[in-house]
Length: 425
Image (tube, rainbow, N blue to C red; front, side):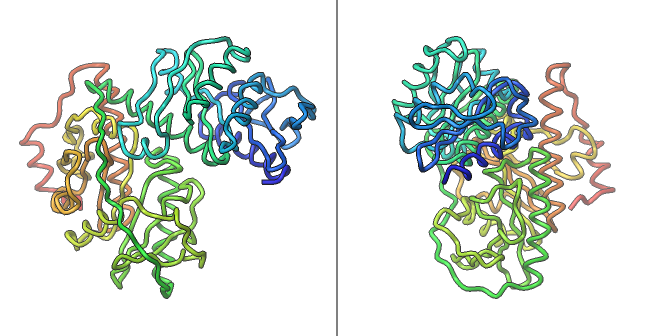
């Protein structure tokens, strides 16, 4: 990117970090390096929730600093990272509560709790404590990036991540916070399990030219609105979460992995049928990175469940705490939860797509796969969304209730009464 684009990207990313509650007014710093070698960085001691383009500080290759503010006190380790790692073009350092929880415990989260975190974060580096802004802290961070880490914890401080651009760096930091929160939930539930082997639910695909219909666009509009809503409700992240619906021709309307769920539109969706993806509904050519990690599994679920119009796959932090702890989630908490979810199936990691597709059904429309993901289905998009929302909100309640007293679920007689009155599907 040129200098002006890089400067704007720093401002936009800082706004994104603050908006999504990943740092405080005074905490954190963000930088990027332009194609001309100029570093743009957030200022020191200026309100992170109200920055303008004029507040971003420019650091020339010769070391000269231009701007109306002082640069962040962490400038030394930002500049060191760019010198050591020419592949890194953006750096995010922030103080999200869940990340800081691990930092003050002087431990590192493990990306091996689920494939999405392994994919986004790689291995996470340990660190040591030094005073913020010191050359010693800069040296510690530099050493870890020099070893090849892109995600570096900072004891009693926070974490720093580097990316191929600022979007990549932001996604890594968001994923780190989600990973940490999921592990904290799992710890409350009794333990944290990790996995070494990853089951691949994707499929090698080619592209085809497809006629985009009004039905396709209408379905994509609904899915886009629900994915944005899911982001606000913390059911999906900017980098993960997939919603898919069938059209009347049997094609699957689905969001590609590479598009940020916070800003997705109907034009970003693609169609899938018989091993092929279409161009985006907006007419853009599909890029190599525009894949859907769970497409083979989604296709199998639709084949086994003709009554389901929509499949929703995601990794919300509360219910994923159960998946990482290997604890069965009991939906018999309050009548409303059971009506929507029925009994939730717990599936061991490594099951085939065919096995999973036979477990999820109208009678069991929500399943949790250990160390992998959560899947809900519905007769329409809002039903699948509602189930994902209910299962994660209920999981949040269980985690909090465990700090109060032993949980008492509704009994079988009460469940029978619910089933005699409500269908739920």
